[in-house]
Amino acid sequence: MSAGPALVRQRRLLFGATAAGLGAWFLLAGPRPPCWLPQCPFHAITGLYCPGCGSTRALHALAHGELGAALGFNPLLVLALPLLAAWALARVAKTLRGDATPVRQPPHAATVALVVVVSFFLLRNLPWWPFVLLAPHG
Image 1 (cartoon, helix red, strand yellow):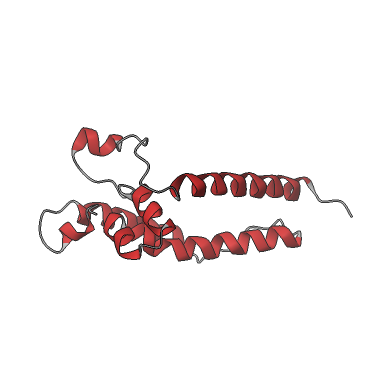
Image 2: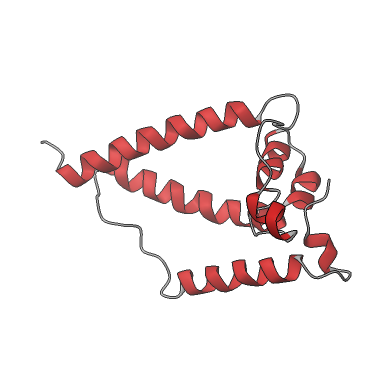
């Protein structure tokens, strides 16, 4: 039984994503935070923290088992990772079973995600406690 073109594409994408993920893991799992990464251009221009600011340092901290430090760098990323991992594992399982249909999402998942990310962006830039705790710090 041969796989259809959509399934072949998905398997190639899965292989590429796995290779890229492993490469990124080896870069992030080094002994110190990657200093070769450029500063966030949005933060450099505006002085505001974007929703992704601190993500690389958070992933580095998680790679070293430092959950508290990771939460200090980007709590939204750390809290969203289990949901993203569950979605990715469901997608991988369907692809390996030979099922090319997309993983079904809750009806308003995209709207909720957008509201959460925009709210996080706004709140982490407020200069008052407790919102200052959302800004990247280590």
